[in-house]
Image (cartoon, rainbow over all chains, first blue to last red; front, side, top):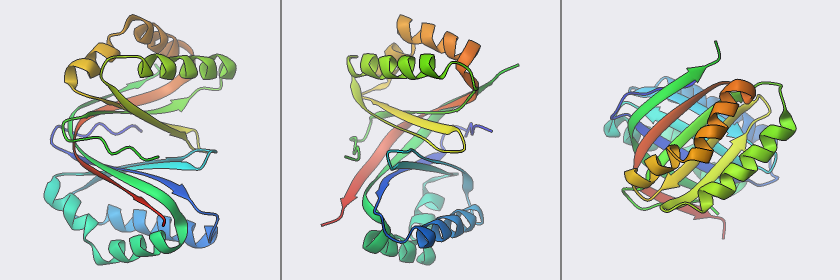
Length: 108
Length: 108
């Protein structure tokens, strides 16, 4: 359930606040982008949550810097980001970080 | 709005799924822990979202490894984690990562 990527994995932390515009278009694009990300070389997982206050957090994991950058520069991904800035997002932030350790806990 | 921590900041990514137990107790504890975190040396910000599917993501940022570990080992934080495992969490994961770069975008 919870991702425990090895040291050296790249975490791309995307936080965003949505506009009120084009909910259906946004949902379809978000789903399409997640599907496309999963097909990319170096893809190592994704987790996402959007709270009732409208703040969304999506973290995608990549095996290394090269594959993280390839995803950032993917033509379809670039096109959808452009659309996001035009329509869907009030504001957003991106933080890129190198994983040093990870663990998970599950109830017995 | 969106955090853009400098390179070298530590990101502690906490993902969790809640049990159905003790919602009021959980909410009070989560609020108290966020307040306590803000008072710690090296605190560099926190973002949090819980989706309608029950997956929660909280990322706390720390100026360096020493202050991230001091918060992990803080006695009140340890006690509340214990309570979380007993009552509030079905499962959770922690990923620790070193920030390499960050930026934010805002609609004009």
